[in-house]
Length: 164
Image (tube, rainbow, N blue to C red; front, side, top):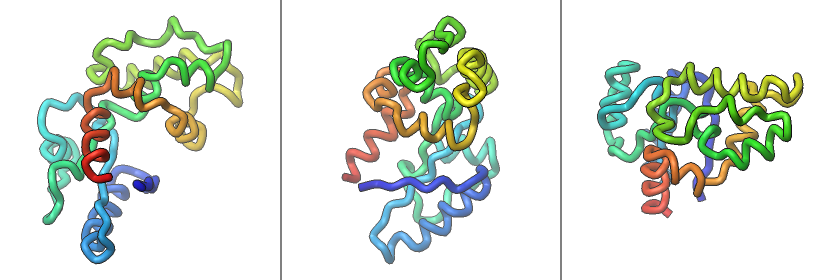
């Protein structure tokens, strides 16, 4: 079964991926780099990461080993409205959330601001916040809902299905 490791910031995550990739052949593992795209994606993931971050595709890495949350993790959260309602409760302001159409085209700042605005009345301990709470929400999302609205999530699932 796949496992995930939160690695910190973008550059630390990329560095840890490269380390995992070098060790993978000895361990029979298949490390995958999963990061926010931080911007619209109009090319292959490794090409996007090279243009945006200056990251080169490491020797031995294949196309599927770069996966992107387009444009950010919060986009995934917005795609699953039922989980948002369950997680934030009755004070969630759904009318502050953007349409589900073309979610991956929405700028990171727009998505994050919408999620913060929609949850601002949920209380200090219940509103959206990056960190432990955001990762707890991420773990509760329904993959079927994400597949319906997020083409890059579908790509990630195809890669995982092929590897399992």
